[in-house]
Amino acid sequence: MAKFEGVRWAPNQLQHTLEGHDRKLIAFDAQSYSISRSLHYGIFLVFEGIRFYCFRNNGELCLRFVNLRHNFQRFRNGISYCLAPKHHPFIPSDEELEKSFVDRFLNAPELRGFLEEMADMGAQGYLRPYTLDQDQSIGVTYPSQPSIRVAACRYDEYLGEPFDGVVVPSLVRAVSTNQTGCLKLGTNYLISVKAVEVAQSVVPSAGAALFLDDRPDLPIWDRRVTEWDSSCCLFALRDGTIIKIPEGPLILPSVTIQGICALAPREGLTVQERSVTYRELVEWVQNDELVSVCSIGTAGILNRCQSLHLRDESGAVIVTHHAQQDHDVYGKLANLKNRYWGMFLGTEDIPTSIPSRVYQVVS
Image (cartoon, rainbow, N blue to C red; front, side):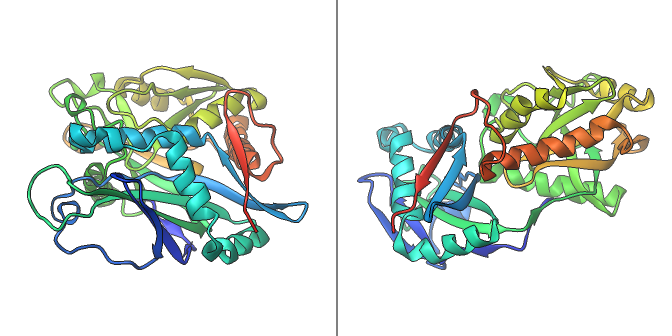
């Protein structure tokens, strides 16, 4: 499973209690109650990943976010799923989350040195809001004192290239009827880790597992491709088409993939949004139509899989896709990654369909 490299965390985090909206800065290593439903049962473990960039503009320290409201909506949807109806009125609005994340946290004097260092390095920034139940209880119920914490870091790399992938049809990451596959919940990711374990039993160098849908009762060829273990999936074909899998109950709505697809026409690529069956994927590989399978996510942006091992019901590898690195589409995918990061750097014009915002850090 993909992981961060070269991480340095900010010296503080923010705590925001939902009932009362009390916001206070706490130490980065602040403790949580050992008796908590969040720790014992994984209840109310919701999180979000938000990319940002810190830079100087005429001497002023500034922060740039792209499509931040989409992150807010995704985070709020997860919180709503995990709370009892009586707490729904306390779920922060987009404006309240903005006040917490930007005004109260990133604008805190305690973080200025960290942000100045980021700006000097031109480093990638990652904001990590997550949730905890502050109540001292291990009861199997909804949280009674829900809170949000917000941490921030800079990092060098996430997943990266090259990486090997393996299709893991034997595990189901989420089930449509539970409506959790489209949410960023801690409970989704144990299966992701187990899937990578399976992938590495097939290919020891595997860094990612590709999931099929939640219909193991169907013939494997009729099942649909969903996501990588911790990122969205994008297919690039020889004819210059890139295929985005439609959002639905099993697909986490990706902030990054929206930007990548909006930028694709600038590289002469055509975007199709449609489902892909496993049969179709196998045939693409067999017919040499597939240039690359990409991992799309907040931290890594876009990384191209160098080899994808496709397996049948018994677990046997039936065919292996190798990225066509000499095809011009392969190079255009790298350009798309650079263009996306360029939106944060201010070197790439941001498509009108992708909202962006710059905040000035108060001196």
